[in-house]
Length: 475
Image (cartoon, rainbow, N blue to C red; front, side, top):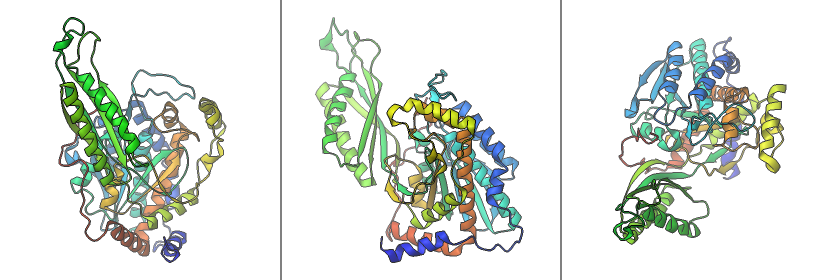
């Protein structure tokens, strides 16, 4: 980007908070600090429940109950999703959305110990969404109290967004028009570092490919059988060959979710679950067309039939550097996560599990330099970012060196290390919201960048098509 375009953003981000009309305006950071006990309690409770996507009845209910105590008006079951909701407080504008997630991951076990243990649940908060929910809740309450104390016109909304992990909950909220009147959206995520970098994401789509064949005795009458598992394996072989001929930044991965029950029974049903990712939507669609052809070819070659159900799909994050540089300044104002002696001992013990890839603990307290990068994950926040100018922040809720979707991330997400990281995020988000309510120049610059990035002929298109929310995809 030319220097002449970057400079105004730098000046906006570096500018001090405007002088409020009210002399005794509360400090948003202090408002968040006062809510630490609530942050920790909510985060830990949702961690204990570890509810999967679209099944987060208790988790979403807890967040709604806390917001109701604070006078938020709550609309439940939005976009035909029982665990989705919108909670609002305030009058007039601007309207600022704060996003919250609360779904856990399947296939993980969790404990809050620094060594690997199992708990028998088969689900865990390995992506820290328990912290996401609690930190966003605290930020929304702090912003509400600031608006109330200062009399500033504006509305703060917390969007309870279920099933981020492979369910694209926010896509259905966007598709239902629930962000049409939102001026700006703020989100955050758990991580092993603190950063407000303008990091985009990969667009992605997933589907379950279901093959049907003919059962038979695998030894007594093999000629009568047509193995659905053969169909799955043939498709997987062709898909793996595709990797050599895909763009470097693309990703494709799968699991076999059903393959039969006994080796001597030719399976008449088998299923694989595929993800395809690419930096832009068209790239996903191009690779997807090839994957569908691989499924058709596999069925033809094995004498089986195949059909598939698209489960989720996300557009890439549309970064807004005017907002990202402002958020970077707020994060630096807050600072990183400071361990006490007990937390440092926990972190050192957990770091042993990383072996030679262990990192020092100091980065948890530091803020990474600002930059603009491509992230290789995917998120349904991407669709929100095409509906309204959106900004995010990541904080060190996990021990440095921790990967998401691991037992180590699940462990830290249930401890005070995670709770402190959620507080850092809540402070940065609250400060960012206050800046947006009070800085008209920033609002104008961010909106102008957003409009230019989307282009004059932009029309929203979901990678999900018109399918209904897959409320049973984790059952």
